Image (tube, rainbow, N blue to C red):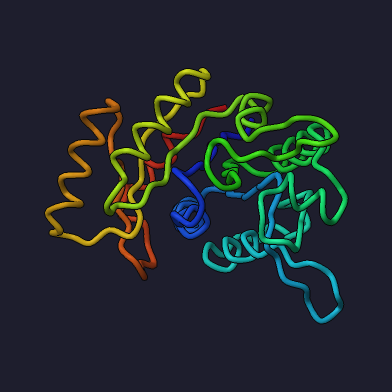
Length: 228
């Protein structure tokens, strides 16, 4: 049976996809049969054939070296760079939970470690007009625990604590925190680690500097975050 983990963030542009690529790479390089999945991607570009390319999935695939085909990685791909609920209102093709579930289950049947990335922050609306689906509904439907990606810099204490408290209020388990855009030795960022750990009771498990090509975390410790 596959082991799974959900990757969410304190907001848009904190580097979820970048960090997810390093996570999947670490699993793959440790000899684990790793895969990636995302329910919906917005802001994608078209290839020469006119088809939309799932940009986040392609990034993770290229960084990690996994052999998983792109067409397994995301059932809903939109061109407009807005949240999935609005992108589908503009372009059509609203997200259906049964489709997301089916795709996820199929990936889980083929790979041992499945990393699922969310869209935006924890309150991202996935579908609204046809049926109300929020990111937390996807997490609950698939029974996943989460890892929280946050920016290491100014304002992160507020965004981390609010996100964690919201997730706990919704019975969404959080395994720990990764800090992205980290600058070693920066006094404010070091204090942010201490304060976020103090306020949430969670550990900052890894800190990732810009341009890092590897995750500074033991592969066994990383794999231990995944659950069946």
